[in-house]
Length: 209
Image (cartoon, rainbow, N blue to C red; front, side):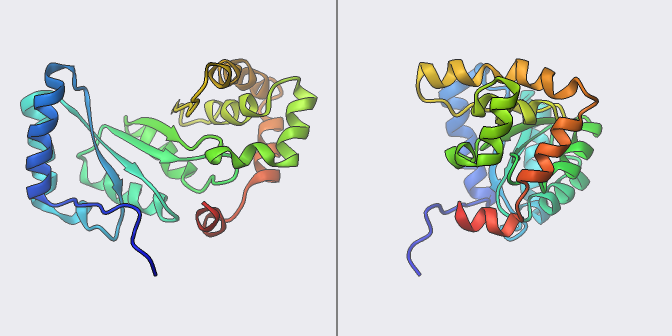
């Protein structure tokens, strides 16, 4: 079956070692401390010792505590995380293909959490979708601008990670700000249509990823 590409250790011992290393490297510059790729399977959201330590780090050091999500169960994982009352921020995958976390991201925002969105262009593959290209041409914007603008226009008001690796990509990505405004002009009808046309089942998205 091959080796997993990433091994996650959400134990208390690992947390203790890593938070000391992080503090040593970043000192007073650290504002947000995240659990990377929290899942239901990892059990971290049921680990009272880890959750208590995260609470104490927030109180003692003023760190905001966050978690990043991945996989088909993002919504369910976030629901469980919200119930703990530990987290100030959530980073999740949401794009025009994989929209399943949307309702829980709205609840997170309503609960006061900062929402950060990753994989806004689905690691580039969303840009090849004819529905997106056609809609972008009709609106007079670049496909990546439209894809990211559609995220910025969501009710959970996310911070959207660009993912750009060149100056040209970043320049194009910045067009998302005006694209988001255009998507709001007709009461959001164009946005809803685009979302309906491009949505895929989460299982299919994560399998292809």
